[in-house]
Structures are given as structure tokens and as C-alpha cells.
Length: 162
Image (cartoon, rainbow, N blue to C red; front, side):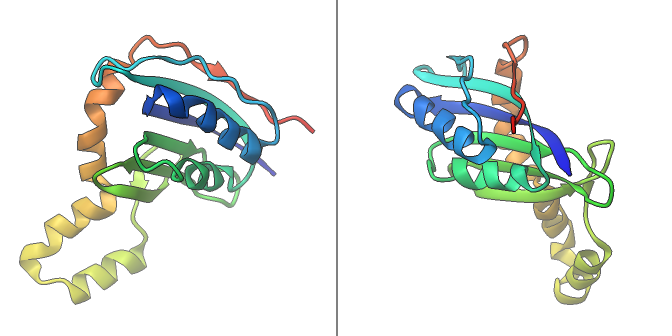
């Protein structure tokens, strides 16, 4: 079964850009050539985004491949497919990698067992902070300026072949 999603590389040093393309090519099994544009929030950094199609689980594989460069800021989404939740991965150098499940409409889904565990093990005063951790709030806050800087940027469409 195939899935599809989007990769947003919000900031990458210019020298790392070809490595990002090679890593994505290795995961998707097809040559990836992104349209890089300057990232206005961080002079000297580049940004790119693309859609992808590949086997279910490719979103996690893409995030794992991109994680090899800890200076990158990126997001990878994988849309839900029949019987499989969608996923979103966010990486910020100062925070590391965050992963969340996504509903069909793009909401972050926190499974019942995680919420029950949180309520059982977390002091009441710390529950709101832990919920924000599960929702990836710090990652969203850190990435928002980079997202806005990409408005109107070109998008590359990628499709797995074979």
C-alpha cells in the first residue's frame, strides 16, 4: 500500500542540500532534485519542500534519514491510509525530533493509553506541560517563523517509481 506526504526542509546549510537530496533519494528509490530557495529567517540557509509517494512508513524513514544532519530544521508528514494513522515528524536542532500521530484532518492524535498513563504518573500541576510536549507545541513554536518565510515558495512533486 502506498502513502503520500510532504517534506518541508525549513533550513539547511547550502553545503548540506545535496546530501538531503541523496538521503531522500535513497528512501524513496528515485532521484530527488529539490528546488532550493533562500531561507529569509536565517541568512545563508536554504529551504525546500516537496510532496512524495511511497510505501506506508516512508515518512518515518525520511525523517530518520534527515535526522543524520542535526543542524536541519524540517517537518515530514505522512497522510493516513486505510488502517494506518497519519504521522508528522518535526526536527529542531535545539529540541531534537518530535513524532506524533495525525488524524485524517491533520490534528495531532494522542492515544488514550498515553493520556491515561500521563494522568496516572504526572503531578496535576505538570499535566498541561506534558500535554504540550505530546502535542509538539515547542516544535511548532520554534518552526513557525520558518514556515511563514516559505509562503509562496515553489513545491517539488515527487513520486516513487517501480
